[in-house]
Amino acid sequence: MANKKANAARKALEFLEEGQIIGLGSGTTAAEFIRMLGEKAEAGFKIDACVPTSFDSRIHAIKYGLSRYLCDPDQVRGIAVAVDGADAVGQGYVVKGGGAALTREKVVAYNAAQFIVIADDSKLAKAGKVVVALECIKFSAPFVLKTLGKLGYDASIRVGTGKVGPIISDNNNFIVDAKIEIKNAANLEAMLNNIPGVLENGIFTKFDKIIIGDEKGAREL
Ligand code: 5RP
Image (cartoon, rainbow, N blue to C red; front, side, top):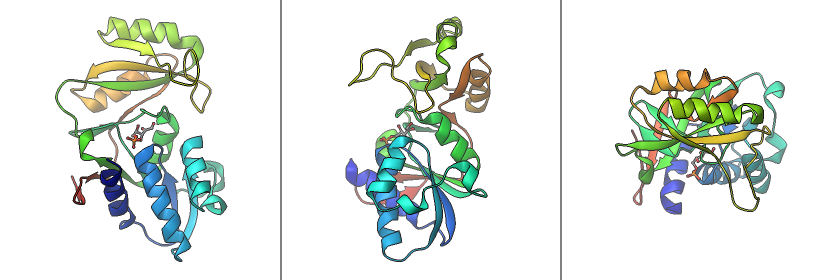
């Protein structure tokens, strides 16, 4: 699996140009990209700045020698390209948020001139329900669960390992996971964000490229 992720990440490097401001995604596939970007920078490739989408990607950027490029959105004039992983890749959409970083990921991805999704071939969505994450303010969580229930979705507050109770996002919020069969992704993305207290959801319908990695290499969808 690591090899498939690395192959997707390596392919994404081909689309970078020198002097760009780069959005760094979160998760294990994005971490492969950050590692390779660090190697490329070390070899002399010029980067203007990097905007991380989570503490996770920030930690990886520091680990792989990119700390001097790290910036927050208010320190850059824009983002040229964002590269990030996905939990599921469907027709016209990707689902993200397995690492609870969906809100910052979407802010960076949707504000980048180019958004490249990198995923291994196990992420190609099969028919049926997928888990869609919703970041919501804690106060709203009981109502969000009730609303999702009324819509017919099985939903629960995400709990993790290494901590009892709900996990807390980088933005200090709860994550609600809802099992949903995605039919009209764009409508669903907008509808879920209309639930009071929901900050963002993990359906992404705006991207420029999807790169799928397998054992042999990587291809653009
Ligand atoms: C984090 C994400 C990740 O990109 C997604 O979960 C994929 O992770 P991985 O590359 O580890 O499979 O959306 O919120």
